[in-house]
Image 1 (cartoon, rainbow, N blue to C red):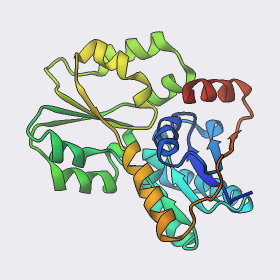
Image 2 (cartoon, rainbow, N blue to C red):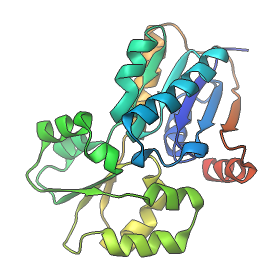
Image 3 (cartoon, one colour):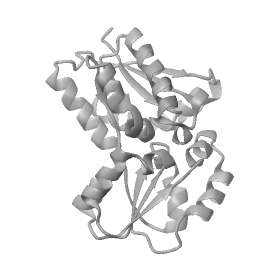
Image 4 (cartoon, rainbow, N blue to C red):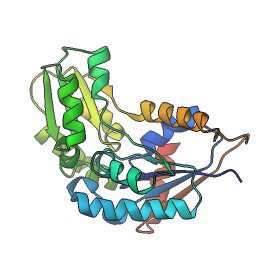
Length: 245
């Protein structure tokens, strides 16, 4: 069997990234690691995240993964550079809020960036924001939102969004957490017909390019997908496949 690609997230939100990857690379083998035991990542320290993600990287190395995708904005923002230094032999692809897309396609439009506290305040994101700041952007830290999405608690999600989303007119929403594309309908219910940007497509394209450059694309005509959850929660796996479908 061809070497797999590892996909990691704090839970099942990374399924939104995996969907984009599967569109470009449907015949690869994948291992998806849902670290729900330590969810949410957005409230953890950098030191804690380093420990959790390092453990997952060791897991992927044991499985002989040829590449690893950080399908988590918080993990990318806080520890991806450390992981690249520790594991220089591994192709590691990260995701970040697609704020540059606002600059490229919707400049000057009233923009809302939604992300975890860790991502919003990270040096990596703030450098990106200051580089492409359109002067018309609200940065919204959304503590606990990923947890509500992870739990699938729609009533809590809607109540939370009503409390936290701005009352002013918003035209563009940057989804800075891979869980957030799962609730675009709920967001639109409050903000109206906004334009959404997220980093999933960019990650998929970057992964494909790196695999091509390193002659690591599969020759198989079909692929496999293995799901692993750190809390051994069978309901997580069931919901993961429902969302993937």
